[in-house]
Image (cartoon, rainbow, N blue to C red; front, top):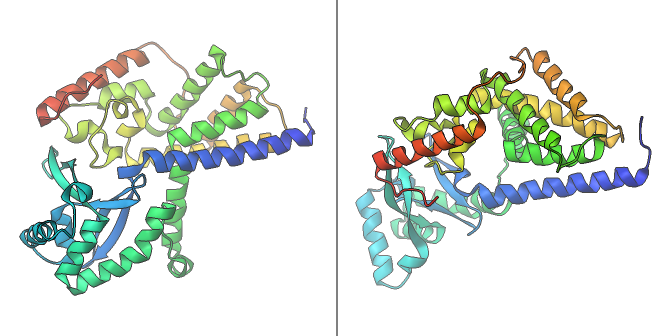
Length: 342
């Protein structure tokens, strides 16, 4: 039965808006080195990690050498001269970071912020340095301030670029953290039997989460972690993290061990399910958690992905988390990284 109370609808709209804002705050606060500004030079791209908290980007000496078409030794010499002349304060513009090398191992490497990068660029005075300074003052500013940069002309004339952008936006919208934050907010309004403190609600969310994982990989979250967290593999097999070294919290998240194709499947189902749930809420329609879960399984079947049929024994979440953290400690030992505090 529909609830036509306009106050309820208005409240939901404001809640959804607040939820979207919170999602963006989450992305800006947590993504940091998972977001990269791409600078193209000589037909290839150089990824510069964005630090939203400090409103800057970081580069190694090797990356600066690539940016400006000089040697790493030239970059090092310019930096030393800038420090000596008092143009830069070394402690303010540089820090050490764990950088994954081609051999899959992480090494402590000095990285430098945008002030240092631009200062070296001025010293180099090459054509590439001039191009980078122009890019940094326009496109890069958009990355840092807004978290993205758009080329409207290109998007209008390049359908493939527009499709790629749409996929990236969907990936952010349906990332595990954002998706469940939005779905929880929506369910609080449209599910008759939803109570955040009820164990049934927690069971519902864990089952729906495994429905996503199973549809994409044929495995539950626990099964993915137990079968893919491997200290002998680069980055412990957490391929979704790219070159970033996994943390204790990363290795207990199943999607970090999923392939790009598997993540894409979850994005498609997540977007469709979220739109359905939001549609019910916007109409003020009350549905049960079971109906929402049934709808999720219907959507999975519609895409002809494997449908999760329920649990049948096996390791529990606590065991998977313990296993993953043990693998992480072994990985750190093999990579000569400091052990976790926890």
